[in-house]
Image 1 (cartoon, rainbow, N blue to C red):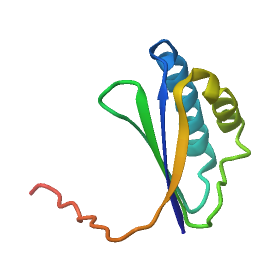
Image 2 (cartoon, rainbow, N blue to C red; image 1 turned 90 degrees about the vertical axis):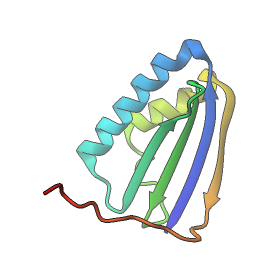
Image 3 (cartoon, one colour; image 1 turned 135 degrees about the horizontal axis):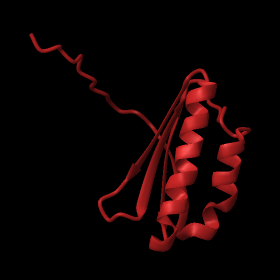
Image 4 (cartoon, rainbow, N blue to C red; image 1 turned 90 degrees about the horizontal axis):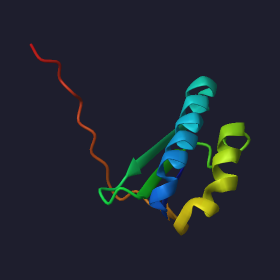
Length: 103
């Protein structure tokens, strides 16, 4: 299993385009539903820095061939003030409580 963290900062004037491209990517992921993949994107409170966390049970990136991903990735450098930096994460521990329904 591979988990990676990707962080980058976009120019404020490119936020709308970045969000539009990300939405299209997540819409295509929802339609395709690649097995063994968890992909999350977050916007940090500064309003221009994104963090993506990608977890792949197959140690692959099954989304690389998606048209929306290629469009997003191929244009990302042009939108960035700080280019993407990717690091592999090693899980030390994890806690995921079961949510109880309100009675």
